Image (cartoon, rainbow, N blue to C red; front, side):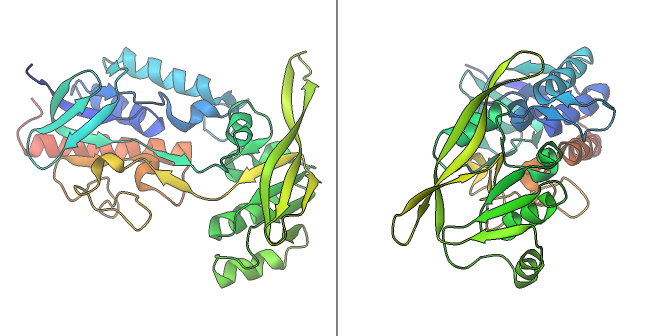
Amino acid sequence: MSATHRKVIIIGTGPAGYTAALYTSRANLSPLVFEGAQPGGQLTTTTEVENFPGFREGIMGPALMEEMREQVLRFGTEIRPETVLEADLKQRPFRLKTDQGEYTADAVIIATGASAKWLGIGKDKQLSMAGGGVSACATCDGFFFRGKEIAVVGGGDTALEEATYLTKFATKVNLIHRRDHLRASKAMQERAMKNEKIVFHWNRAVEDVVTEEITTPLGDKVEKIKALKLKDTTNGAAHEMPVQGLFVAIGHEPNTQLFKGQLPMDETGYLKVEGGSSRTPIPGVFAAGDVQDHVYRQAITSAGSGCMAAMDAERWLAEQGLSE
């Protein structure tokens, strides 16, 4: 079976992928987008998004992604519900194999995102998707915990940064760490330890989440976090900690397995791009969104980098005489 050829193929459909599709389709490049295993990306697992410009009353994460999807379809983007299984970026045109076929492309935009690491207890990820008081992004969801007591799990810079940020809203932030010392930088530790709202709980691990069913003002019944079941990692003793929110800050894992051995990555697996651009070291291959951003990880910054990738790809194709 012969491979289907496209000028531009975009892998991923979060804010970065959709924005890249918007700009490339408006540039008459007829992009093909592969949705992958999680169409719409991480925002489809969130509830209300209040920090994306243009929606003064906020918008639900899945609704925002659906708006982006319909917008790119309007300009002629083709979206296929396929997952890329193999990518050969060592030859041009680039070759991609999905679970349904084979494709070639003159330019590839990688927008496969990153996935939050969860605790592996089941309920944490489940509650995050259902608006049950669990999150992996303080900047995204901190506002919803104003006046509440919450917990943050982790011991690195991200955990302390999130805990410090959350003190703007919460009455008390319980920092839970399975060891008796932190991995975070000294400066970050000093800053957090000086904050009177942050209480450290050493040698503790979250074993389970205790929930209760509540009725919303609209009459819907939802499961919300009520407490955490903790275990002492030194003697196994168990106890409960009442909280109204849980932030899991044990890191993110970039979805870059496809490209190992072909594209350079940092020590945690994020793709490296040239400063101030979306260009990877392979001409014609671009990266946008959380797959190359371990600092900001916001929907708006992902969308911005998707725009950059589209414009970089358009210019590169023109330089190669491939844009017509």
